[in-house]
Length: 549
Ligand code: TNX
Image (cartoon, rainbow, N blue to C red; front, side):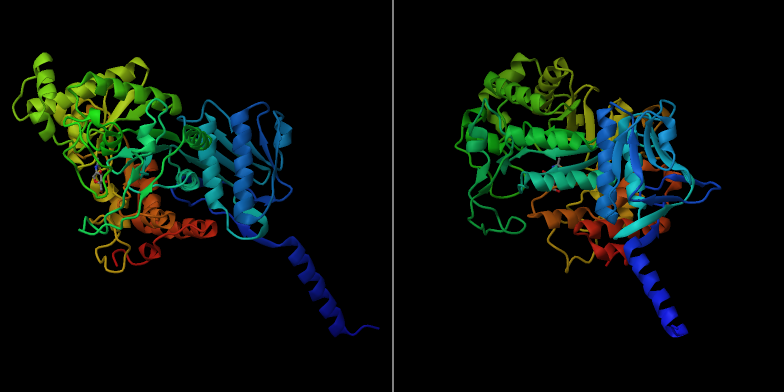
């Protein structure tokens, strides 16, 4: 006869073996970033296991992709593999997750997540909305090797405050690989963002292949070296450059579109053009020679708009850019364009005469010449069904209100633009420049541009000025943070600059201001950060504890 001791031992062993085979269990928490509305309902938890299927409407490719992505997310975070299956049959939903379309669900990107013991429904008016619901479910999951997760019964819902929820990435000052750009897109998707403003041309390089002008990338994509620090007299002397082929761009655009992110390319003009001028010096007022810049800042050498060839060049480039990027918006820059060359250039002065341009109040004839040039480009793009976005300097050049303004020199230009009737995207350098420091005590930080935008400053930013008249408020279509890369040389440094500040940005892009609460946000942030850790992303850990150290 077995002793009682050995009986107990066998029982414990059996329990241990079963528990190991079953793996760990966990429970989801819908209090994610950005915070949705959550209403608990009376029902037991839904049990998510490896047997759970993900249903999607038969024949709908977008929803099929959504289902596959949800399956991938669950596997990445928990190790559990869920199969996907097409079905239109309501009874198949029992016991499973179902992705559904329903025209009665709020706006285009709104979603509802209904969880009961009998099943999970992720419902959107569009596949884009369902994708946002998927992100919320993803962020609510516990992280680690799990074999069973309890999803509390609840009705969860959200609808974004702003239609334009952007991030910007400068791939000129430093060049980043296709994989890095895709990972940046992944990070955006996790944060519920939908517009990537991709800065592709500047004084330090031209980074998009244009078939009609091969020298743009043969010559214009390469610089002889890079200045050390903040424009010190020392240069590293290491040739530097790179560009994206049209095939790579199409691949990235498709990758983003699958995550419901539109890429808005920026071809900055008429300033920030030394890359192009080095390749085609005849496009400048002096004819050069020019050199792709090895330092940072603003150069006096910009496009000569007195020459018809320049306009033709711009149109040809935009033709290819439009082929690559289906975005409604094309960003044409317009910032930091000194006009000293135009003042001296006979052809630019002739253009001013021919077009009957005259100085007006504080606006010089040259400022209005930039307006004339921008309007030509704007009309050209409009003929092709596209709209321009430009930096807030355009407000000083009399462009019409079909130009959307990006307010960067502060928040005031945005408010002014909205009053004038322009749509506006708010990206004021404080606190929306993520190339700025995240703390005031910078001694132990990687070198940054300067400035300071702490996590709290980002969180507290309100894009719609309190005194903006009611009839102008709808012109503020969104907010964006910018990642200029003069001092950012590698992917972990990009991630360090954006995480966790992107979480704060996501919440202001999604939530109505009265629902924001920084203390509550910080409590929710720790789980999001465990997801960053799980994916191996770099982030600024100090921002989670001390606010400004
Ligand atoms: C200003 S924002 C710039 C960029 C720089 C950035 C550095 C804007 C329209 N122009 O060219 O990279 O500051 O923070």
